[in-house]
Structures are given as structure tokens and as C-alpha cells.
Image (tube, rainbow, N blue to C red):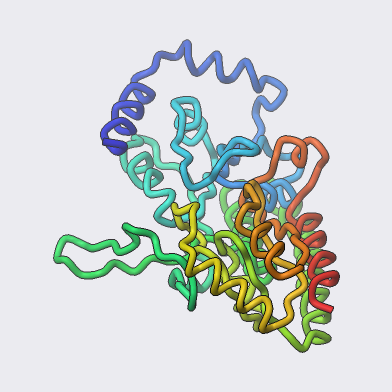
Length: 321
């Protein structure tokens, strides 16, 4: 049903008159003539902004504060993609609408899938973790389909790879400004490299490298990068919100057994699970921001990938003593 609705929207958008396009352009007249970049999620938007700078009009499709896994493009979003010089997207199952839109467009848009420029990991279910009721996907032959973790940017090393790929694509697509893109990319990548080194230096001082999340866990790439262990209530892309009593009991027991001082939750969480585990174990709670999306307040305050990940590092320093 969702797919049918999306295709109806797409057909109506592609049939819009020139009047609709002029209305959209009038809203962005100060960006007339600029290179147009569209990103589905905040990390791609932020990386592109640091590399392209004022030379590009950069649009973020996912509205600040909204849940990324339930996002569906609006007609205006589809127009933005159609008019883009470069379209950046994640590439996972939650964005399966992307291929349907791109296949239908007469004019092919330059695209960059973040999952295609890094090594990807399969979605993982660790001990004690709550399974989705409909977690097993099957292909037409009845075999289990492999689901990959989509949150590739949570490793700063991957953020560097993605930023280099964006820079390379901009240089190729807009050669007149190639030097600007290359220079901006090198400056930004140096900052990401420092962030990576700061995390490594801290974790080298930590004996107990276990994290417990009373929440979904979209940080597989982060823990793999730094050799950390974890337990959590749900996998990263889980649609579940209420864990079983067994999951809660398991996480409480692990927190007590490992003497964990802080139970983490992610952005836009209701905190109920982490709060209940913390109450049962005498622990604190803290936010680990995955950077998948930001709130309107964070966007207005100029928060970015580096500032949010630096805040994560400071919270880890308080939690992993």
C-alpha cells in the first residue's frame, strides 16, 4: 500500500506544471545559480556543507526532530531531488523509496550512497536483545534476506571516507570549483581525523569497554571501530518500542554484574527503558547522539557532526571511569 501511494505521488509530481517549479525557485532565489545538493539525512547534509561551503545550496530532506525510519518523501522533496546536481542518501532498507524515485526520473541525477563507500556490517542481534516480531525478511525464494546496519557515519573513520567521496563527486561534477572543494575537504577531514584520535586515545585508557543502552542500538560501526562491547534493548533499526521483561531483567543484571555507572539512550528517545534500568541499578543515564537527525533547537544552535560526537566523547569520559 505504501509503495502504491508513493508511486501515485511520484507520478503527480513528475507531471506538475512549470508554475510549481517557479514557486519552489522563488523560495530559494538567493541561491540562484548555485550548485544544488540534496541529502536525505543530517550526516550527509553536514559533510556536504563543510566541503561545498557557500558555493552550494544544500537541502536536508529529513525535517529536524523527525523520526528517520518512518520518513517518506513529500512531493516537494521529490522535486528537490529531481532538480539536484548531487543527491546524497544512505542506501539502506529504510530508504528503499530512493531507487523507485530515481528509476522513474527522465533526467538522471548524480547520486552518492554512503553505504557504498564504506565496508558495511550486517544488522546484529546480541545476547538479551529484543527481536522484532517481523524481523525475518525473506526473498521470493523463501530464503532469509541479509539486513545491513545503515548507520555508517557513526564511525568517524567512515565519516572521513564519506567526506572524501562527497569531495570527489563535487570535483567531478563541478570542476570549475574543484580546488575549493578539495581544500575544504582537507580542512574538514583533519578535524574528523582529530576526533577519531581523541576517541582512540580515550578508549586506550579504559579497561571495561562495555556500553549498555536502554534503547535501540544504531552504533555498530562506532563500537567496531574502537573495539567496544555492548548490550542493548533493540537493534538499530528496530520498530519495537516495548521490550520484554526478560530483556529488561537481562540488562539490569549485566549493569550490576559489570558495575556500569551509566545507562545510555539515543536522541528523541522517551528514556523509559534507560530510566527503569538506571533506577534498578543505581546508575545514571546519558544521551549518546547518533547524529542521524537533529532537533530544530540543535539545528538553530549550529550543532554539527563534530560538536555532537565531541559531546558524546565527554559523556563517555564521565561514564567509563
